[in-house]
View 1: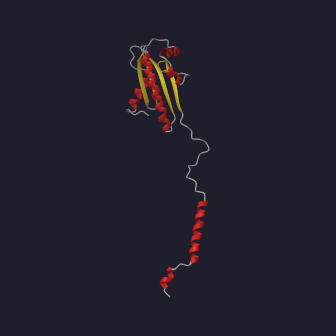
View 2 (view 1 turned 90 degrees about the vertical axis):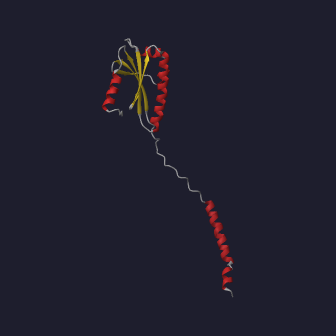
View 3 (view 1 turned 180 degrees about the vertical axis):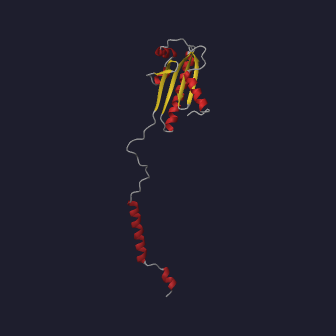
Length: 177
């Protein structure tokens, strides 16, 4: 008897068992439910969105700003409509419109009688506010954005608000936080 020949011949029972086991394992594998995809656990309450407040104010007296009750609808106001709402009693030459937020100041001086320039500045500030809202929301930070209307009398080059900003900038060596 050839031992090589005997080892090369396979036992029919062994082959059947192997095929049967393979078939059973493939059926079991097919019946198993696939493992669920990795999911990030969800919080019971949704994440709070950043709160970005937009406020408008006007200079009633030098250095005394009063908050207006209007919201974003003020962006659609004409110069005449805004002046009627504010009831300024004194004469002034120019209007300073300031957009300010944490470490940011956008001052715009416009002639009192220039309605077209007023609309341009308000449209520009509306775009800046929208961009700031997106930026603050992206970094998940609360913020207050203020737009202030300040009359500038003839012969005055600075307002109380601008003086305060310049003082802070000087004290902080140009770094505003």
